[in-house]
Amino acid sequence: MDFDFTPEQLELKERAHKAGMAWRGRHTSWDRDDASPYREVTESMREAGLLGLTIPTEYGGKGGTALDYVIVVEELFRSSQSWILGEPPFCTTGPGPSMVLLAEQEETRRKFLPDIVNGLKGCAIALTEPDHGSDLTDLETTAVLDGDDYIVTGSKRFITGSPENEIYAVFARFDDIPGAKGVGCILVEKGTPGLDLEPGAQFVGSRGLPHGEVHMHECRVPRINLIRGAGGFSDLMTAFNMERLHNSIYSLAFAEAAYDETVRYCEERKSFGRPIIEFQATYHSLVDMHVAIEAHRLLTYKAAVTAIDSRFPRPLDSTVSKLSGATMLPNLTQQGVLLHGGDGATLDFPIQRLHRDAIAAMVAGGSPPVLRNAIAAQLFPGHRFRQHA
Image (cartoon, rainbow, N blue to C red; front, top):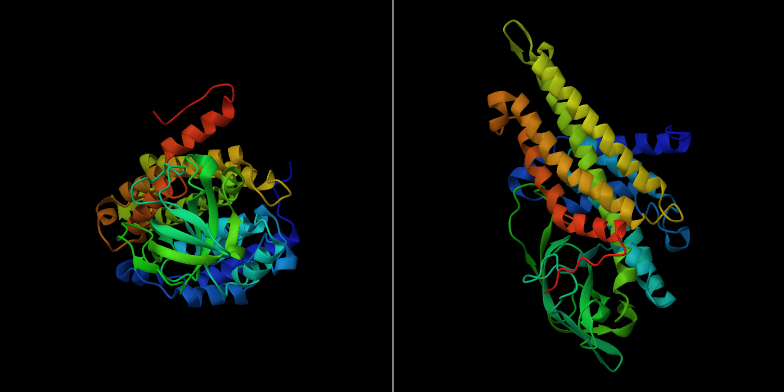
């Protein structure tokens, strides 16, 4: 198995590194103010040619592979130390555009994909509801056909990209069919009467990333905006394998960033007349951090290179990788805090922010218990692991 990147991939990595470093140092103010120049960052990624990485060229994408995506996003995250830099590739390559590719009508794909893929319009995923969280099939949001339109009513929370984005891929219950069989997805555009976009709760980490709540009060949405109606839930979920790969990359890159900062501190900090990196307890901890990163790297890269058509990560590989990162990163950043000693408990060093950012890795894209449920269902298909009473 060849672990070397091709010349084209090395060029892509260098381009992403340069694009990320251009924003290095800005994360401190973004974290403090919980705000960032979201549109400016997207424009800079467009200029660097880092949008729509795996989307077919016929819709304006680059037609690349999932591994290309990993290379770019890992380098953007690590060099900038900010979640914000990964958002433009994610919004133009991740579950939003991937779901639009699954639309029943070509007209729907032609209407939305070019603007999404080129970063002209952001597409947010509106799935989580206030009263249901990880219970993705027990949705109260409804979509009722009325002539040539659907009437969409309901509320969503933890919507990354709200209220900045122009398009919301809303998961709703169609035809009043209970359970997963009744769940589908429809695109609701910003400016639709009855659509209210509100800021969400303040997060401990990953600050500066816009996120909020989406409330729909009898929004009239044209039928052409339908991606999949009742019965399309399982197909739609395949798009979220790309999100889990993205979250795996996040864990990998932020672990690398925490390792970088901790090594730098341990080489510069002196105690008892020598750098603390020379004490066995310190360099053993650094070695353990390095091994954890390399183990997770293999799972992340595997999820990318085994992707179907080099573009669609497989459910088991992407979920295993996501679970690995969700459990590895918080432990690793905590070790980085400990190696910073008293300085790790202050706001003066990046490690505290990276440790707070690690919290998102545990819950974004599925918490560890949810991921373990999904993995168990795939490992042991002959058994039923029902969550409902």
